[in-house]
Amino acid sequence: MRIAVIAGDGIGKDVTAEAVRVLNAVSRAFGRPIQLEHLPWSADHYLKTGETLPANGYDLLRTFDAVFVGALGDPRVTDNRHARDILLGSRFELDLYVNYRPVKLLDDRLSPLKDRGRKDINFVVFRENTEGVYVSVGGRFKAGTDDEIAIQEEVNTYKGVHRIIRHAFEFAQANGLTRVCMADKSNAMQQGHALWQRVFKAVAAHYPGITATHQYIDAMAMFLVQDPAQYQVIVTNNLFGDIITDIGGALQGGLGMAGSGNIHPGKTSLFEPVHGSAPSLAGKNIANPIGAILSTALMLETLGARDEARAVEAAVETAIARGQTTTDIGGPLGTREAGAFIAEQLKLRK
Ligand SMILES: NC(=O)c1ccc[n+]([C@@H]2O[C@H](COP(=O)([O-])OP(=O)(O)OC[C@H]3O[C@@H](n4cnc5c(N)ncnc54)[C@H](O)[C@@H]3O)[C@@H](O)[C@H]2O)c1
Image (tube, rainbow, N blue to C red; front, side, top):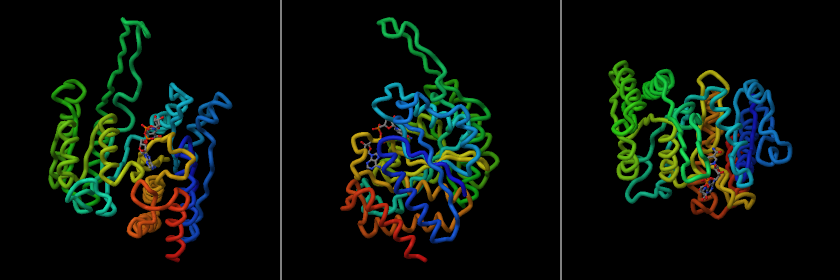
């Protein structure tokens, strides 16, 4: 396996070092070579060279089996240009239309909800990842004046909506799940989300064994806190998926616990923790590396290395069960020590 590693900015660097430690440990434990190539693309690199990523950057990424990203975002780059080019650019250029975000509570002690535990918090969110409001169609007129007009359009195509909804049903079917819930705001956003309604009903008709339900996104935000056990598979658009998976991160014990995949089935895909670069925590050896490490498990699973993925998840569960974690989830360790403990579990399984 050849993996490109973009540590990026802030705590992205801290947690990527631990994800790399775990990948090296898994490689040794299973005797499977994993070749990691570090790319310097980051705010530092942009501020030093003026380059966000090289002209052939996306082509370069396509030559790898997968890409791992820490996080991007730095207060010195106020327009966030480098993050847009590197992360959003990769999602669009590599056509990574599936944003796969499992929400799985790994230990009852980490539940933020009274009387809800592992049995209640275990679902996946499929977020459309190439369209919506993130495509930056629009513009500003009379910017900076009291007459300013700012327009940000939401793009929904039949192709884009169809392929993410179909992927959600295929995932459910392949994993023995029986419920898929689509969230939109079709009561208020009557153009774009009418398309989501139409396609959802049409696709659902091909999966008679799966119960297809719909919720408005505002109601879903409430139900995720009140009754998360009702969900198995959620499918939604780019913006809503972004927001509800932060709620999902909180349901897992905190944003530092959540991993994700940006996937185009069969093509080079990109894996990253759900959290951002958290500048206030950066370089202090306090960020939780588990979201990044679980993202490596998603990457291994997607590349067909299922035993290796299971071993990484098991090592994370052991660390949590024994309290060998960072302080955000109640442990005594720093980022490096928490990563080392997880890597050590992989060595012990030999
Ligand atoms: N995919 C990405 O790279 C990505 C995602 C979101 C935000 N960002 C960028 O990150 C920067 C900071 O954004 P933000 O503060 O809104 O979101 P953030 O996710 O970086 O941090 C929000 C808060 O969550 C907690 N947190 C996040 N990750 C944690 C971890 N690993 N361990 C412990 N606690 C953790 C911290 O309390 C932090 O203050 C911005 O520049 C933003 O654009 C990048």
